Image (tube, rainbow, N blue to C red):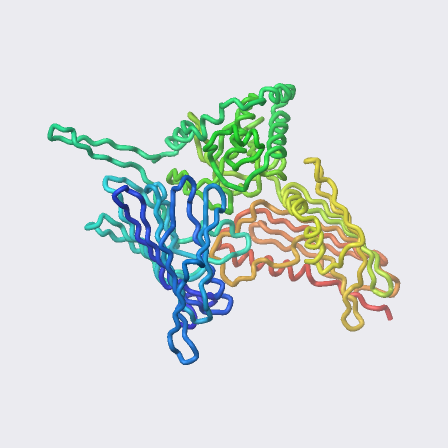
Length: 612
């Protein structure tokens, strides 16, 4: 095999991914897994660096019996085998919940076949979550053999494309179900795709009950049944009765009463909410562990002023509730984590909890771990997702939208060009709403990198001056003020004036011929450019770009361009609107075509020639 017939661009192919899951005498979930792949291209050699993560918290899961080998061929075509040495396997703790075993396989080259296997043992079948058939590499055969616990009741859901068949068979002699898929192309990163997990071919499991039969001592038997969550209402009840969730919302926090006295002075509900939100997001440090619970209570996180997303947001909910605000916990799955299945209450499909409030008929969703998003905005990573309101009487699923807030950039540039083609440019760029949140996060993370990435995409030099303001006040735009000096590009006797500056639309992200995933922008976009360029007496445009309005049939994407000349001054006005935040994969040809034409038009320079 030199290439994968059903995924010709792949750098490697998974020939086999097989697991057998069963139970032992202690009803532990024991899984044996075996993976074999072949390296097809040079860039695929790194696939020999293997990482196996597992849930090590409270000793729930152990990984053992790792074995691996590499089969290659020498110049004479003879087999050469290289086996993994035990000392080459490393274990590290990722956080208090997860650990990882890793190893690098030796002597890999193009044409090598890699095989490794290992055992996993979990305390119980509660660790049974899903089997994923698809990877970023093509898979020839994926097989999952699951032995069901006696007297257990479980549900499973299969997520797959219509044209990819899944074979589900039962092995009644062993009480097992077998799931298999074959010849699955790899799912690789695509622009604005949301979570890859949403599109992976997979089967998901959820236990709904367990019956235990016992002898009575009188020749008869009795049966007791444990029910697991099977409805959204039961999920809400389960969460609210949990010691690590519901009971923490009403728990008194040491010293919080003094803070509440200060917050009580805020008579306006929004002002009180904003004050508490700012207190938590600026005063607590997130350890980057996603959670829905405070398994060890809130006291430790409250005293340390740090914790998991579950601990910090339950503190936020606790304080909002103590302040007399009608707050509810909202279970969410951010876009990177993946969409939830609304047909069945899988608790584990949510990766964190946030605060949900309604004030004057307006929705607010607050995340205490998100330091840059103001109270008035819904966190960007939750837009176009579905959350679950955890409430005793009124639990419900809710679609999370942006309340008409957009990613807005307003660009004003003024340039003066001299006889030699040197230009002095003054640029003022204002970022509003989600554009500000995105920019502020990047700026606060690395200011020098932010400045470099601000100018490099437009092939502009380091600015003479660059200043950023408006970061502190939520009501202000993130304001950029830059002064630059550079020389226009030249071809023959002509100078090229590029006016498409700082719009964010200088490069087409949709370059693949096909699209497998939906397009999720998160929010709508508005980009406005006003450019004024003063020309010297010896230069004039050979031809002005045409004034135009380009739009899709449903006006979900619109480009307006107007270019005028008055004496020696060029005025350029551009408005770009993306009026829909989500597009299906079937819409890809239209989106790709619009972007290609728009970017080509915007990147056409104005040609300046010397007057004769």
